[in-house]
Image (tube, rainbow, N blue to C red; front, side):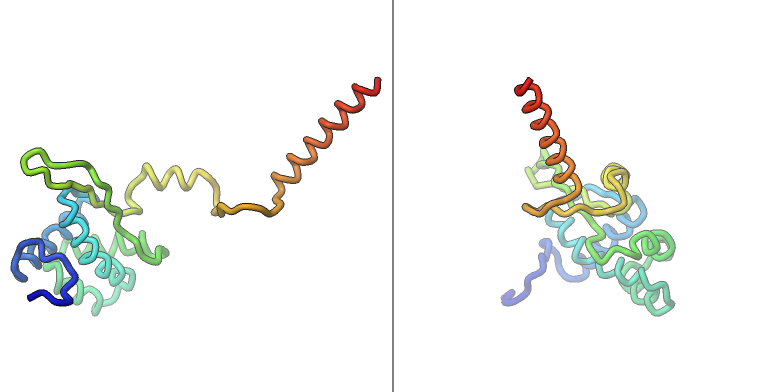
Length: 165
């Protein structure tokens, strides 16, 4: 029985599932973006995000713990030297899953999983907006509102002056 076991078993036994997720994690670290089924992508995100968090602390202990999961020296180097440095200020949410449709052969739902900081399309648009983040909320008077109000008042005054003449 599987009472209380909430993670997706992916139709595999423990050793096969562990090897599958480790291989997918190594490929994702190497290529920064991979295409897979939606279920595997969601399982990979749960598997890899704690390892990326560990890579933010570049110590021998952290490297050995992550090596216990991945068993690949090149992937560990890239994870700690490049990815860990790039995501150091991010408090989590290192991976993005984008649904890409259905596979033709068996209609399995496919998805692309990628590192958030390595997608230039999304990051360049947010960086070009400006340094300050904006909040979306109702009400309140800001500088733009007062300028618009002043412009409206000046226009109304000009219209009244024209009508008086």
